[in-house]
Image (cartoon, rainbow, N blue to C red; front, side, top):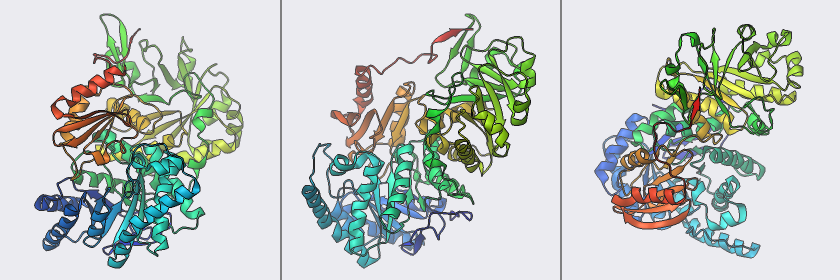
Length: 639
């Protein structure tokens, strides 16, 4: 199955040929994945590659950590061809130029990481003057040019793939550990390749942080254009995204934001699952490309959520708030709010509020008949609000037309539902000065992202700084597709810092699922941290333990630690670098041996795997970040 963009206005690129498979804006968005087997196990790698191909994988990447694995790529390639599979193979290279030079003669593409191809990261602070920096570039030229010439001779494609966590000390000291550093790392290698008239290149800017990843790709596109370099195709991916729902949310937000910009020519979704499980997610994203992609420049608008009016607890410097639609509030009892994150203890007459809980309830017709938990409010139709005895903790909701005509409004907070066509000049003039206004922007379907961004552009043009809540509906029946579509439609708006709240209506009659997805989108977009985050690599032939089993085991011990990020890396190659965004790291350093990190600081080296989780917990305890697991994760409040 070939991923096919639907008439999308994509960023124009040159064409790159990978064994006859075209990559670039004139071709469909290509889907790829990476094997997790030992590259020296020829048959296992062939068998797994076939499963990936039959799932829809168009390029198969295989690690080559040394010359022996690089040489064995020939046997793998031959075995696949003998069984009738002609999908191009990609050799994944870290640290070993000699392996890259072997692989480039045997497979259709090589991936090199400019952060470790000619450097070893020492986390050293070094000040380079121009002469010293040029000497470093000359050294890289001597190391990299042989591979470039081999690729050029054999018609082999190349991906220059920057990873946020493995930037060289040279780059970090001159440009910073940031998107600019990521871009300059790739451009150093790209300029060398162009000096040899070699352009069969794909570029990537991968990070486990979707926000960093999105900004790096956007900056790369701008830099290529401003410096007069060729518009090379881009390989998109959020590296070490993790597993399950969280992994899909992070990948969909990062990749989706760029696809909405018209950026991206090949996709790899990195999940800590079997590689064939990555392919349907990537395909769903590739098909989620819209006819009007790249038509909006909303991501260049100043991050408005920090500069909005504060209305009650919404807007200003508050984190984005989470809302829920309740159809039959009058028929509910206190116990029915458990799926919304509020658990009622009838014996003590107390509410327990979880870390992930609804803060505002939007009721369809009649309001709740009992007192809601402290800190929450219910939003209702303005006509219903008028007849309430206690109007203070109830919030009226209007259409734009009714708001202009209303004779009575709430003194603190008024909600106005709108779509882009409702933003008339008359309403915008009032909205620009109203300090009580919260806008609910309704979106649904494939055009929802650009509907949202057009609203933000309109608000900016009319100096409206009222907080905005995204009210998004997705009625896709397939749960995985619903997660992917909703995350890619809504998440980019939070990545760009435009919205102040979120309300999802997706999984029918399952408010807990909507709640989990809403908080997952806010966490992945780095706008609100509410749960433990796991930055786990997708495994490859370098992995020194069962990543899926280990991730599940570590999660079972630590998933109650709010706002802690734990990196779980299968080998030292993807260890301290790739988990740059993590608070703690669990890294394979040898057979049944684990090295533990605090951030990028090595704390304990080569400890037995059997003791590693306990030792990790001890480090978290030493830092004062450990809490004992309890029935409820937040303090009780009286009803």
